[in-house]
Image 1 (spheres, helix red, strand yellow):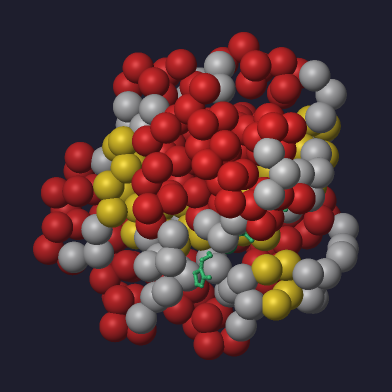
Image 2: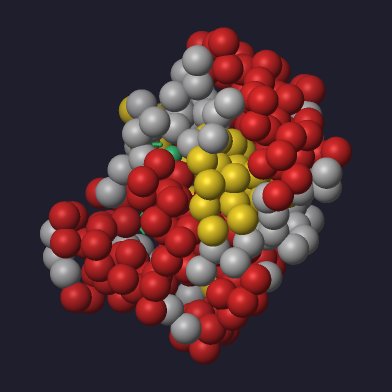
Length: 258
Ligand SMILES: Nc1ncnc2c1ncn2[C@@H]1O[C@H](COP(=O)(O)OP(=O)(O)OP(=O)(O)O)[C@@H](O)[C@H]1O
Ligand SMILES: Cc1ncsc1CCO
Ligand SMILES: [Mg+2]
């Protein structure tokens, strides 16, 4: 979906959010023109999935008791033909791998958005991490392609270099914006943006537009402010102000490669 269509159609994005960053995630969806809703009550899922245009599942603060409910949520979304995005926070920690493995076995995840260490786990590649952060170095393009082939999902690997791959077609965005990594929840919000942009159909193109949106807003914000506190507010403003033309110019203008 194009940015202008998001603003016209206001897709409803159902976020099964973690309890650390839901306010930021909701604001990012809102300022771009979508409509966020958060919930974690099983009895509400059928109604909410029916009303939603995308479902974004973040496993950042899952309790085991919520796992079966989350699988049910993903299955409901699958049955209703709604896109399912997974944000597998710190999935490489063994006790966190188990519920993600269960979800992937019992429901279809269409798009996985994670940092390099999280995506490396799906690829079966070693990549160092510390808690929620990727700290290592590696061939992120290769990791994304491998993870896409292993999971059958579109992979959105974020970091200094963003990589989007379905295992056959791969795009990269090579733009360094260190301040983007200082705000906890930029990745969570990016996953929700990916749900928003893919709400009318899942594609590499839509996923790339979502990642380019966050990166470009980060580039613009970091030209104006230099510290994390101001940056996060400026980032929201830049997302709010971003135009379709600017986004197209960024996408066509050299930072993005096949
Ligand atoms: N060094 C960097 N240079 C440029 N952009 C970055 C850098 N690190 C992260 N980003 C950007 O920050 C956003 C979030 O990606 P990141 O990989 O930090 O997610 P994450 O680790 O899941 O974050 P969080 O856990 O805080 O939600 C993406 O838009 C990504 O492009
Ligand atoms: C800090 C943190 N811990 C679990 S989820 C989360 C937010 C970043 O995803
Ligand atoms: Mg994350």
